[in-house]
Image (cartoon, rainbow, N blue to C red; front, top):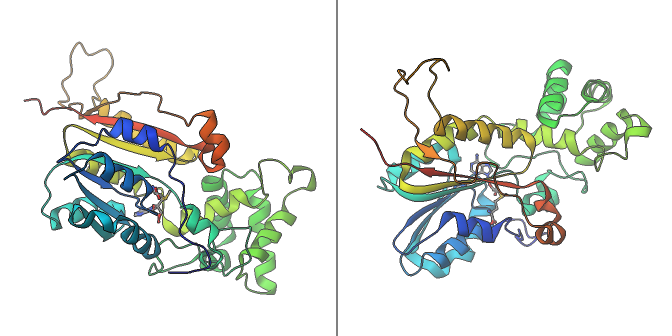
Length: 319
Ligand SMILES: C[S@@+](CC[C@H](N)C(=O)[O-])C[C@H]1O[C@@H](n2cnc3c(N)ncnc32)[C@H](O)[C@@H]1O
């Protein structure tokens, strides 16, 4: 574990997560994005004395920090290094059939952002890495230095929702021909220079959207969300709840659409008098628009500002 930054991550929407997840003694809960274990600790407290918590993360630093923090709960905690898209497999290996709640708190942790050596942040000059799982095959530096300019522009536009994506990609291509781009500092200044001066002050740091895009591409963050949510719903016992915290519109759209499909899967034409496709709702959505943080939380923890908690509740099987 890198010691430059202690593992600190303030859990977002903590009270709301506990209220919606409704942990109880004897329940089985899965935290698919363990991070520093903040949400997990609260779930363990609320499900005392014998609730079980399964925690997953693909970042070894996160697992090590969470293992230390959650050690007091002993056998009630099972931690595994895994991408959450392998949720089904992890539960099978543990011999767990059904669970009472699953939490996804998507994206990066403050620890990942604040640790210079992880290369996630434009605030620190560091090797351009951005892998959550440091055994994963490629880093942000590989994307920046080897991907065709059109592909760079496409990911910066799609995953960063950056209107100057083409200019940024062209600047990257020009600069990498002179010398490989290997640090966050150099990339941040290339991006800044590529954005027209009059636009640089809008929407935070000028490199924010490009860094978000690269992080999403390196970690293939979006591809795994919908399949993981489907696995989670399959594993929920009737009345069990799935909670997902999203931090930007791309994530939120994927989650919203996936939950809607699970809540209303019927694909019959609207003028059919009754359903003939046979697709049955698997969940209901108790808080259809999701839950945003309070003004007080947003003030205390700026990272929470864009957060939204979405909730689904598993329905009983109907025959
Ligand atoms: C926002 S943090 C979670 C913070 C945590 N809820 C807490 O209270 O400390 C997100 C964590 O999810 C992990 N993560 C992101 N995508 C993942 C994936 N597909 N599979 C497993 N872990 C993932 C990241 O490595 C990071 O540690």
